[in-house]
Amino acid sequence: MLKRTISMTAAGAALVVAAVAGCGSNAQPIQVNLAASEVLAQAAQKTAEVTSYTVDAVVNVTHPQEGNGKVQGRMLYQSKPQLSVDLTLDSLDMGGQSLPGGMRAVLQGDTVYVKVEALKDLLGATKSWIKVSLSEMGGGSAEVNQYLSQIQQFDLGNMTKLVTASQDVKSVGTESVNGEDSTHYSGTFPVDVAVQQLPADKQEQAKAGLAELKDVKFDIWVAADGLPRKLALNGSKEGATLDATLFFKGYNEAVNIQAPPADQVGELPKGTTN
Image (cartoon, rainbow, N blue to C red; front, side, top):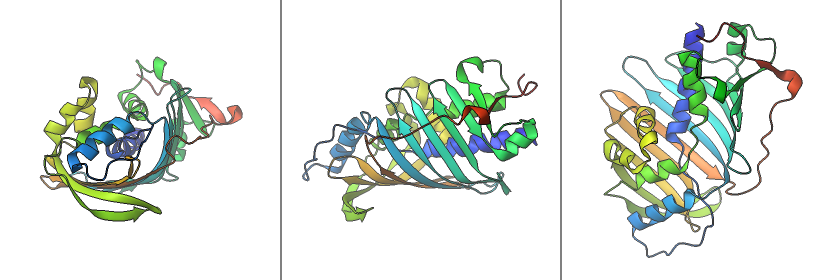
């Protein structure tokens, strides 16, 4: 049961990470006469420079053996003065099993704080939050290490790089996204080609996060500053499907990511690592 709960938590975080698009900064208005592929190339460059943002995400998956799953949540991200992430999953259902109370994780530097009520009960923890140093997890259990590694993988520029592999992207009109006029682009990208746009150490994770789908259809809404405001991904392979929608806002705006109060934080109980 402990392995199942930790694995569900890891899977939920992995789904969000897999679907999250890249973000950028130093935005200048894009030229309206750019080809769709050029817009995506500019977006990939701009999103790599963003230092903070907020994203809301809904991810639905189906699998012929493992069943259906849904993840819904939000994330705050900042890269300076240190890498910090505040991830809240309100809904986490995998294969007919749900995670009561959802999940929250706060990453600051090389320390992650995890709040999962079901995990707390199973581990026998006495505090609401569990604190784990990423640098000390080399000898930890495989499940916990898998989960913690997912929390570190918020390099959100990578998804924008993936869509630049599209050979059929085109503009399909202008729409309002959260009150902002945005150009809607639609296309597909082959996963095996797209992941080659990423650094070598990110490619295997990207393949796993996209469930090794053969082709992915995407729709991306880009505002006048060249940054995405919405991204939708759809893919399938041998009965497995992925359907994700993400909304982005607050580029380079100040975010407040705080570690939980010290009196609510405990260490990972002994006996949970191998």
